[in-house]
Amino acid sequence: MDTMMIFMTGVFLRLIVPLGLTALIVFWLRRLDVRWQAEAEKERTALAKDSAPCWKEQGLSVDEIQLRAEKDGKPCWQTHRLSNGYLREACLDCEVFLAAPVPAVAHSNAHA
Image (cartoon, rainbow, N blue to C red; front, side, top):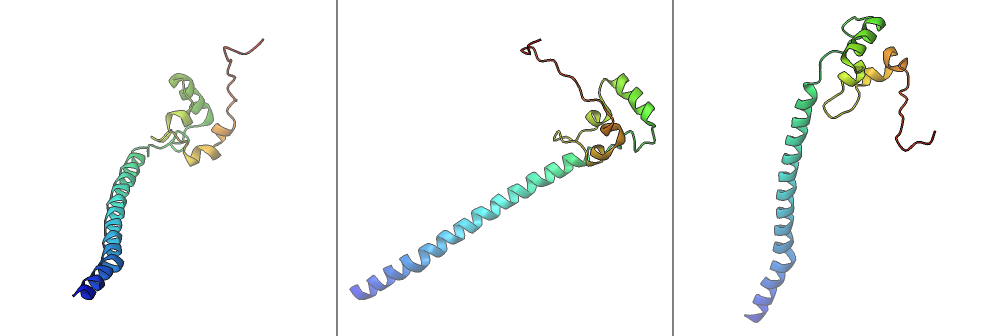
């Protein structure tokens, strides 16, 4: 009887416990994946809201774009940023973006 009990305890410890732990880890990872998929879908939905065409795509000339930028107080690539703050890929190659002057920032701690 003792031999049988020792054998069953060994089988339990060497097979059942690792299989149970593996099943728990798989269950937890699947729940984590579902959560991450939901977060990714939310982000995809938020990015879809940023699909307003840029001013260049609307057929405006460079002069018209500069006038709108002066009126709005921001250049078009700032107005049409994605919701996560990134610039659109189309802005990086746009001649309006490439020809824009580099802003001069005066720091309060800069020595004159």
